[in-house]
Length: 288
Image (cartoon, rainbow, N blue to C red; front, top):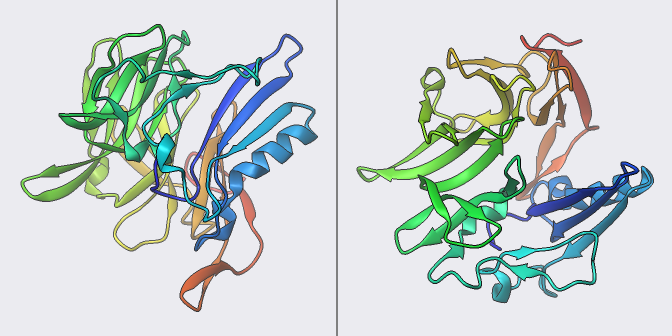
């Protein structure tokens, strides 16, 4: 569905009555500057299978490790309980609506009731984040602009989005939080830090905080938490790791977990220089 980054992947999941998962992972595997990230979704399949779940990988590139252009404007709904069944093209009946290229880096989000998808689409008015009803009908625009990352709150009532727009000839990147029922959207100022990149957004279990990987300017990625009520940002990784990646909250929300790995310049690229480490810190960044 796009050509933005080699680490593209989408997971579709069904939970059986015995709690056994059926998971379909979509993506493609290529070599990249950070080689481990370029094939990480195949690790999901291997890990899930070892845990006893049914996991499948659908590879979507040609012999040159490029995504197929013929599939870039399609959005398929697959029933994991019927892997042999024909997929449904959700955009087939919509004129002038295509999947935005930015969606290649985003996870497709399901609403809490499972009846709506939240994803990046594009029409004659430009790109944006849309709500697409699975029952059919046109998508509803939530926010204009190119979406760089997005995550749905645990209760499904709020959507956090890192968006890029052009304002007065300048590129602007902002983190937005929208209440989906009312449409009220808040731009998070985050102390004016001006994040150049921000990804891996994850909601705290109480829905009042976010955790994400981000960087300003040419800085290496760090892990930050954001209090949505106060708009205050805390760097959780600077005391223990640099650079840091892939943050999540613990199930009780008392601690944050993330990884780190040192990289060294070799030739024209970067290669891992040392083991990948896993860190556990509290909400102030103190190692547990």
